[in-house]
Image 1 (spheres, rainbow, N blue to C red):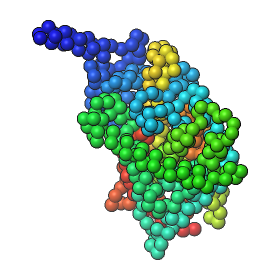
Image 2 (cartoon, rainbow, N blue to C red; image 1 turned 180 degrees about the horizontal axis):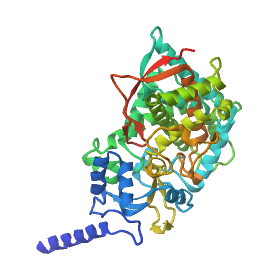
Image 3 (spheres, rainbow, N blue to C red; image 1 turned 90 degrees about the horizontal axis):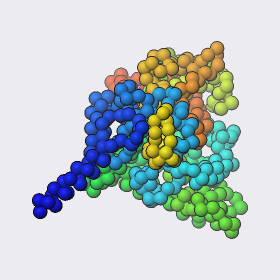
Length: 496
């Protein structure tokens, strides 16, 4: 009996020791403890700094720009600073997407969609969806028209809410999601949703809970898998599963409608075209399936509104905190557009200051964010350190755009003029809100257009001011993407 106990203890000790060993030439970082990895050190710093972005930035100052971590079962490399991130994001060897239950469970345990797949599968599906989205307006003049119409819908909704009053108080971060989603969903699924659509509001609320409960590098249950059984609610497992089940149900209903009403010779949207490919007599590649269609719609539904909406929320937060910036933008809008027509993308070259407001809003958002995780496709090196195959690698963009001492003077301040040089837009190399390389954000042109047209359209018609009884804060919330803490603004029609 004692012999068995001794042998068991010895084996457990060996396993514990092996669990603390780092790969040869692996990036430096805090000590790895058995089972926990470096989670205790990260957690302590995060409690003090309030954010994982700040915690990993602090650790990088001690260990260097390439930070080697282990959180539970997950080995993670966090890249900090412009030079290191440029090398990382341009690396072909590090252009994979992560593996594991957290990333695959959202698509039924399979690698599906566009956001979290890689190599030939990703290339084929990305090429198809980009081509078809362009057919229905993506990156064309039609896209501008779609966004202009959606911005005007929001403006009309605000005017309706103001009614006979002089102004109205809005929760700003709730203003944009549905309207931003519509600008993409119209092309993808041929549908737009009304701002007062109860079902869509409920679905957006469910997704907001998900976005706040997990992060780009996973969730507690993905780092410590046993917790999905022992503490499914606290570990984030339940909200993760519930949110995806609701979204799957919604998307499958949309797909069923398209299958019933699709006329093969007259496709209305990208979903119709994809169904036509599935129903064609020609042999199709293995990457095409109904599951893949639903997964891609889910990627676009989730990513299509969250990042852009949070960027707009940061933008309007800083606009109400900096009324002089708001007035300067309005002066340019009045001079170029006037009051009788809506702003369009054709106005953008003549409105450099509003475009700089867009850039500064993107900086305030992305400087608090991690990129979508990458995966080492093979054993490789990054800044001289060895990155083993399948290790998760992620960029911390704080050091590129918001950290003290970066390329921007007074980086915590909202100063659109920083992007103007001799009257023209100037972007430093460290400005990378959409990433770099082959996985650069698919929706960059749509996001930039959305932000410009919503900022210009709303500032043309309204003044946004602080609610003195509930002043906003620049504090923000972690999650899959960063977002401002809830704040309100008094919206008043402008007097010309």
